Length: 253
Image 1 (cartoon, helix red, strand yellow):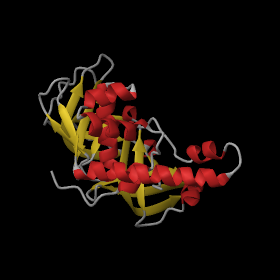
Image 2: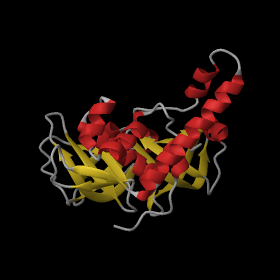
Image 3: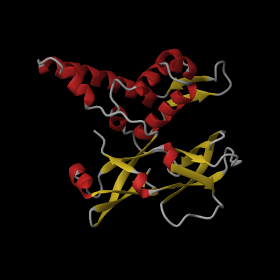
């Protein structure tokens, strides 16, 4: 797998200090354990690893190293990048407190906190805007994920204007895991929608569908669903299909 690009700590810190992802990363650094960090943050072990994956996607560099086979799911430690991200998070928290203290008016702190948007969308993928094409009131935004993987989103003209989208801008592509259909790479390709190739990293079986975590070209991770009983397994090549209308474009910072 190609090495990730230089760090994008600003993207990772965009979640805000109230987000549990930073708390989980801090817990890993303090305890050396993903499971302990998950318990302290009151989330599941799986959710904790998803938090690490999201932050890693946004930062663009590895933040956590995992030691397989330890008690409680294996030990874990922060990389130098992970430690640096926490240092930046602490500095950002201090700066925010200073801004809030100068705000004066009651409720200024809650106003600042609302500026850090939190979302249930598990797939948050750093991207670069490649092109913008208008067709009536709909705009097709062509993106490049991880410097290698093309993806497109269809948004309204108003949304494109409010975001001030332009070619070359750094962006974040978001989509719900339930909007991602994953099939074997050899399966017939659908005529419409984004087609993202990758390799299975993990599978969680379920009656209503198998949840698949897959590694995309460029080092990013995508989570989606395959039909129940798909038989997919780790290291198998797969193809993810995502409708362009299901992709949300966000701007970091």
